[in-house]
Length: 442
Image (cartoon, rainbow, N blue to C red; front, side, top):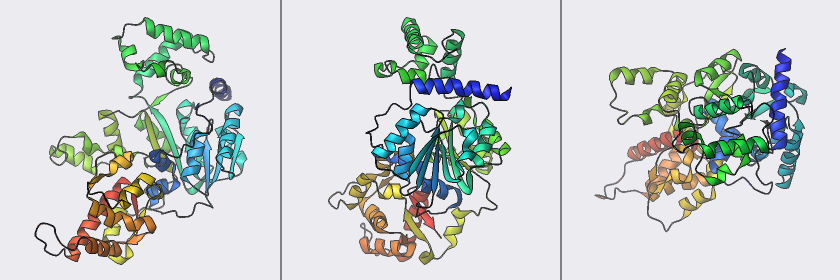
């Protein structure tokens, strides 16, 4: 019986994506300009977040894109992980054809594609350093079973990136889907007739009616876009999740949470007017809570993310507290690396090397994923980042360079002492590492 249910699920999903291959992005689009998406797609980001391992050579790494669709995510994975082998799988033959053509067009020959369901991944005969399962998990009937199937083809220190639709954030869309199911628009694969009825229904509603006000865009471009309606109002098998459900499924699958992919934007402290002046019971409870409890708190207070975007992996035998460990090392033994996506982002390089500008630079203007303003004066920006563009640097060398660039305090021209410069640079390293711009080797 369960296998029949699985086939019904797959058939409904297959029909929708065979009729409307997703995403509908021209093959010629390079998809390598969005530094945030490349950063999130990088194995370097995920591995460092998990075990502080800095990967400098990707040529022996293998990356799997599950439910690759027409290959947009697959292409971003290829750009973000140069040299790695890329494998894409999907149940839609039409989508796989487009995906394969897309990567060949952009010159990624070290890639292969298969028409394959997640249940059959073992037929690939490979294990992977990174498995990307974006925009698919919430369409499947059994999340725990899917995690087990993905875990079987994951290397011991590999990472799975997945995402789930947020039940809280998309609640109104689920109301719309339930309504259209009751109206009979989703018994079979929704096509032009069903799309037309959905449009007519919303056009007939008064603008202030809750369902229309919360789900129907005033953007005519979206209303005219068939895929936008299909992916929101008429989405087959769409399901919303809450974080405790995710954590429970991971535990049952012998996997563990690494972190949220956009962890910088899940900081509970940013929810409060004065995070350093909270009632004692609240401050102690949140500070002492484990990461999963903090995330559940954030989700209930601020459900503002469509996707619960996360990394998970096999549990580590042991994991040291690196946030304290590196601070105890000698300056010559602390090596700072610039994340490759940051290093290769042309606007950032230009901003650092442009000697004629004096105004401070807001790093969030270059890297929106850090989630908050970060203004740096040009002297500090150049002293810290310019040498990292060429190669990793020891803390000792960064302090020495800073003292060469700014040997005196501007206010009274007193000399800057080495220990003062070291405190400044170490504080900067801690901040930039927490945001994910740099990585520490110690």
